[in-house]
Figure 1 (cartoon, rainbow, N blue to C red):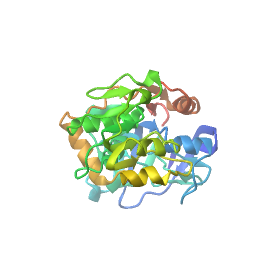
Figure 2 (figure 1 turned 90 degrees about the vertical axis):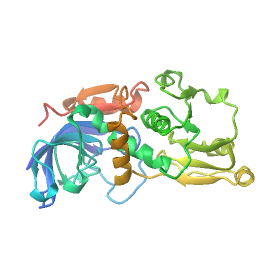
Figure 3 (figure 1 turned 60 degrees about the vertical axis):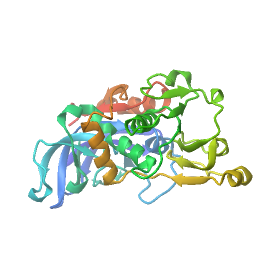
Figure 4 (figure 1 turned 45 degrees about the vertical axis):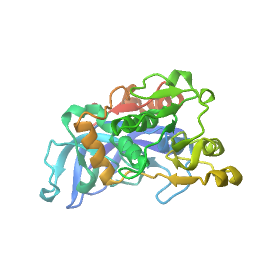
Length: 312
């Protein structure tokens, strides 16, 4: 069985092309993808060639872990039916090309347990589900205190700020780019130079800037916490004396867990978390090369979505 996929053959060399799907097993589903999102974090590092090595890394590869589509074939034991709309957080893979993470394709095979049923009403906004769950995971809910300060007003920063508001918080967001300070709902976005506060109990960084750690430690209260929720390509370090004086705590937030996805879906279904105005750019999958470049280089692009309706 074949598919059309985004193939990153080497850094900054990306094109659409045919691929052979891995054979589905008895517990797998086949999904015809409608939309896929482009991640400006991990996928940018894959595109530039600066992704730190980890298992499964290598070129050529099919990126993507933010896809939405309809089930075209499912095992009876899966609980899914043909025509169901699902979120696809990556795929089982392809023949002759690495599937890292394998969601940016017109058709994919994945374990049924990883396909998340969605309401048809979400449409293309469904590609944001993984980021929303990642943001929820960074909050450490339901036990951890909510961040009072969030660094970065990109799409993940906005989702974390919206989640904080939905859960009763009143966060402040730092954003150095004036063009990105608009769009706040229920929270404030400021230039870091205009914020003198140095007693935040929790600071959540999604900037991916490895040089900010000393600054962030200087803004927490005694016993406060810095949550590292971005993806950092360079080693992180910090001066010990200020961290010692504050008894600082550092927490690294990794990818979402299934429980995070359940919690986020509940917030969306209850109307407490909105995904509106976060998809800012759209492109036909046939124009993937230019779409990826725009996603990674245009500051006005919060989330780029590829439309696969004419690529199957």
